[in-house]
Length: 147
Image (cartoon, rainbow, N blue to C red; front, side, top):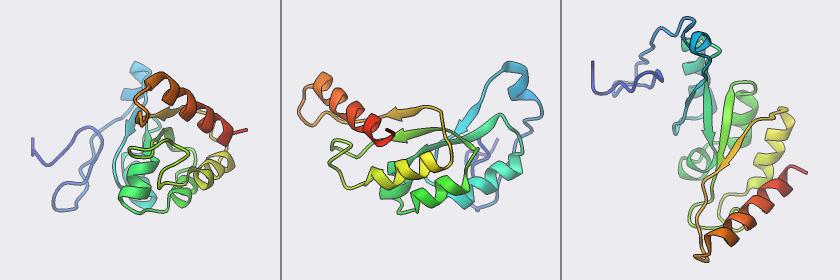
C-alpha cells in the first residue's frame, strides 16, 4: 500500500487525489463509528464523507487545530457538517479554555444551533500545574458554554 495513504479514513494522498476504501456495511456489522480527525475545512471533510458515503464514518472535529492552527471558519464548518460530526475536541493551546486565543463562544453557539447532543472531549493544558484544579476550571467553563 502507498505510504501516503492513511487508511481507512480516505485521507488525501500527496498528489491531492482522494483514496477511498470500501466501507460497505462494515461499521454496522461491528457496531462502530469511525471518526476522521484532521486539519481540513468543512467542505473538504464533506467531500471525503460524500465519497466514503457510509453512516459509520463521521468527523472528529478539533476546533483548535482547524480554527486557530489552520484559520478555518469553525462555526461555518460546524453548520456545513451538521449530522456528520461524531464528536468535538476542545482545547486552547497552553491556556485555559476561557483564556486562550481561540474564542469558544461562537463555536458553542454553532454546536447548539445544529442540535448536536454528543461528546465534547477536553484536551487541555495545566497552566497552574495543579491538574485537578485546572480540569475543574476548564470543565466548568465548557459546561457554561452550553447552559
